[in-house]
Length: 354
Image (spheres, rainbow, N blue to C red):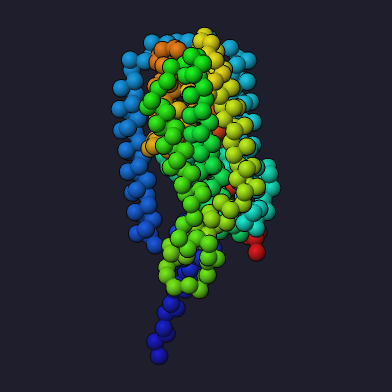
């Protein structure tokens, strides 16, 4: 009798928990992976085209870039220190939000995982929370929806509500005292940002108060959105957490303002602290509309537009903005690489949390 050749052993299906953590379906779909890569290349191409257009459009403001060569070393060190210190409140808020949802993560670990996210977003436009979400899922069993809700409520909605309200009040105070002229476009932007982010923060979504049921009918996306809306609603009802979020972001806004003020000083321009506050807020708002990595080009454009409030020129504002960009890019590279080496890169070789 002819021997039957041994049949190849089928490859085991990937672990569903790991697949969910990295954003893949439970059974690896290579077509989906190819589509994801294609979308990534499209995003990078669009970002490159937009950035090239911004570079060409802003060439008339290149007249003062030579001042960057004479920036004092102590100012650069102080700006870097302010940037690092300003990263601690968001990390603490994220840790507190996760704790409110029942997940315990260390302070230092949360800080570096968040720095990895900033690092990835600096390289890839709209990269999202893929790497931190995968790490949190594998190491601590944090559902992606819970991490997303924690970031949306405490790091996005609360931040921009605080920014819009504070910038609008500051702009009005400067106009009343005659320290800076009133800019209706900036005022409308700040008011719109505050209102746009306050509505989902304080107005409950339909059905968001119902605890999600894993056995409920519907696909994975339906269950994910249900848990996300429930977690957002739960965090939005935590008044103590929201108070901490607003206080934390107020501190961050002041630290950013000090950094922006120093960036102008480094290029030889003295600007008032509250005028720099408006310029910093105008630059931060651009993160909402940017399609380039780290809002590159958009953030600088916001500071150039705010030059009229500072009482300076767009050339000097661009020089200061580029110096600030170099500082935060360097800090992101260093701290992000440490986070990848210390946490994200080792997640695959450590025991998976139960």
